[in-house]
Length: 451
Image 1: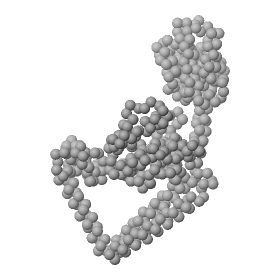
Image 2: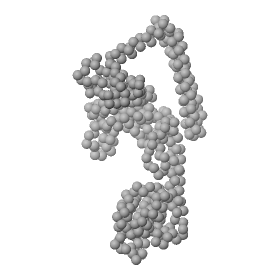
Image 3: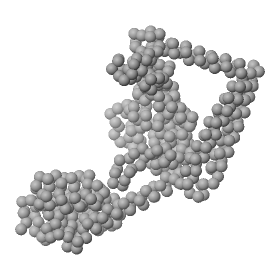
Image 4: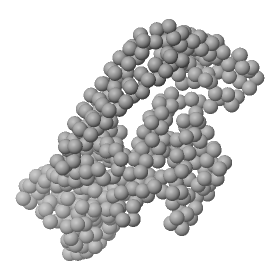
């Protein structure tokens, strides 16, 4: 006997991968198939739930969640699907619902094509095996997609859309060219950061100059509605631009990854696991500028209310706790009152004591040290020259070793036809650069000594 007071759910699902298999799994086909079956078997109180374009590897789908809420309220008497794969492709979760949750709420579950009916049991006894095979399908698809993306990423092609400052070449979609209107703005943002401005200060400067945001610029080009504040730049937008390595003219792929095909959360990748290929498009900023900006970003300087910036802000650390020394000033302070204090002191409520030094005193200490170094150089030019060259030689040899290791890792992922000459060229370039820099420094030293 059928309980016609309770709802019979007809559930349809189609993912993007399933849509490629043809019309047999289309939403229209599933709806017609389930409706005909319900009518032939006497079900009248029907509710059709559809998840179109959703993967079956998880149950974060609006249609299935709506159905589960009705089940928990005790309003559902039967749940119909075309086959088990339409309900889901997660082996454990599908089994949990069909074997535990649905029976607990007296819900009859029927997968028509697989012969599964919870009232009669599994007619063939292979429901669990079918669930397992249904899970293997997206797992295999995920492996194939990962291999395909890996091949594309290591071929030197960009894996995403061009960032603000670039646009796709009309003749080659895989090549980026400069956006004549946005590229100068990117260059300005990097220049302002090198001048000591933070993201908030840069955002204010851009707004004062009436420079449109990326969103407003793209909306204007596509003739879409403009945002309410087209010149209001966000701090995160500025920070994102300053961290984009592609502005140096390189390709940088695999910056994030996911732990499993079931998890959609992207995790930042380690630098050694990324793919880096230089000189794939015209650079907006030089590598030296980009590296300088990253150094400044590591030692972020907070703008003071008194509109004075500490000369050593972000460069001083407490000798006891290792915390940064905070630049303290005020509009009522004179220049001699500006000072640095341990950030962990917090007015005697923190974890460290009040380590205090005035900026003018610190400036004199640093200046005295610079004078002492200069005096040492003048007194023993040859000794200093040898010591300096030895340190530089050691650093450059270490840099060559690191570059060779990095290139070997990337060469293993490159196609065979790309793996021969660039490594030699890079090494030769570095060796020539070392000799040139060393000879230039020696000439400078000799001129200084003779003068």
